[in-house]
Length: 630
Image 1 (cartoon, one colour):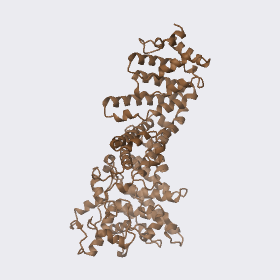
Image 2 (cartoon, rainbow, N blue to C red):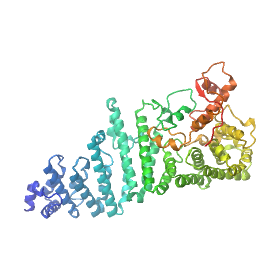
Image 3 (cartoon, rainbow, N blue to C red):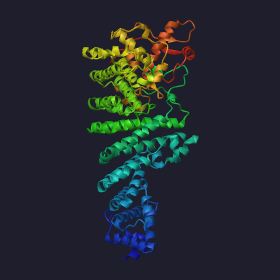
Image 4 (cartoon, rainbow, N blue to C red):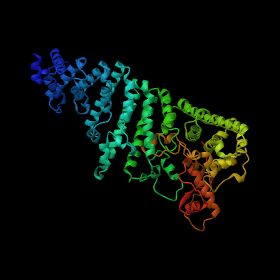
């Protein structure tokens, strides 16, 4: 059969009875068609392109024809010219695996691999087409609950990953070209990015009330699916080359979603609460969900971001667990910390994304857990780091040491010793300038020590050696820089209560503050970012993903409740009764403040009038106790 006859009757191109290979005559016919286009004769070439562009794949014979043609093209890629055959290349790169039969998927993937490996001119186009499949089309997203569609999703994405791996093996340059594409094509959900969103069609639907729920689900699933594919790449040989870049993409997306959420909307509106209620902690203490209705349902963009962040944290936690099971968490941890340092450490408003580090440490306390604290301390002690970064690092360290249930007391004590020694050394060399802003690092270190001891004092003092290592602390706190007057009063007050109760050192009653949550001095050392009120590992605020955090987390309310069992005073409910004893009210206010020490303050009592207004509103307080530290 001649070439002219082949392309007069396209169906004769294919040997339907042999689906595993294409015959020599078919390959020759394809090559003749490609050659004719270069010679200005486009009829046979146009027929070739039209065959690829046929959308109806329901006919088995047509599917077999396309399968054979794609295989013939795979054997003829050296004959394809980027200039004369642009129409063919556009048709190939415009195809989608999502609406093809498995046989066609395999043939198309094989063609893409051949194109990428034969000429560097096609590498970017092949990679771009494969990455495009990380975002399923709307009809797939809408029907993921159907087993058939779910199976097809697995079939498509497994072939995409297999193709990416093969191309990266055949073309060593491929990973360096791939990672920028992965970043560029990641779906964005922030309002500021909506004009760049490849799925703006979904966001348009979100404006239609009748379809709001479904479209929110669509956006959520698209982002989650994309991140799942990124993490799957990280687990492959491609991840060995650029796993740190993948973690940075994931961490950046988590951070952006974290910042997109107005966390004030997480709690029900109650103007009587100066801070997040302790009941929030109680509700989550054993991995329970947040109270029903706590999320503001009126803000669709906030709801999408909240649910997406929760789902992405579950996905990320699952990936870290799989890394632990595969014995490579220690290796992954280094990449994860680099991403944390670049995107999270200096982001003071994040509430959730930092818990990737916390969970990784809980999976491997002896290695990752120890390294995380050590790296944070090294940043704090490094004179080469900017001052805000050092202050942020010690705030993270304090919150981590206070909250990590998986951390042994010996490790916490060793880290405290290094902080105490650093602050003691600073006291010996400081100048006569006593302005708080001139000694921000010192006050950050002092507050970190006191904050950790609020949670860990009893367990540390039970060991004589650990107790002796805290001896310099008294002279630090009595130094002329007066950290007791500068650090956050709510932290200082609780620390002094406990120190007095256990006889750590002599505590003057004049140092017990019960009328302020912050002071001008603490605002001065905290700076514009208010790092004096920065407790990054506050209780976890998401629903589904909290189940893996809560078993490893020390809650302040749990410690308070343990001591309540041994306290003879009953719980007191203050209902704004004018006959309430003023002294009792002020004492209760301190305990209310300390119950909330686990949450970064939402409001500040900046003047007595405002404080009195809030105190007249209903609130629940508990007796003053020194919590039983773990």
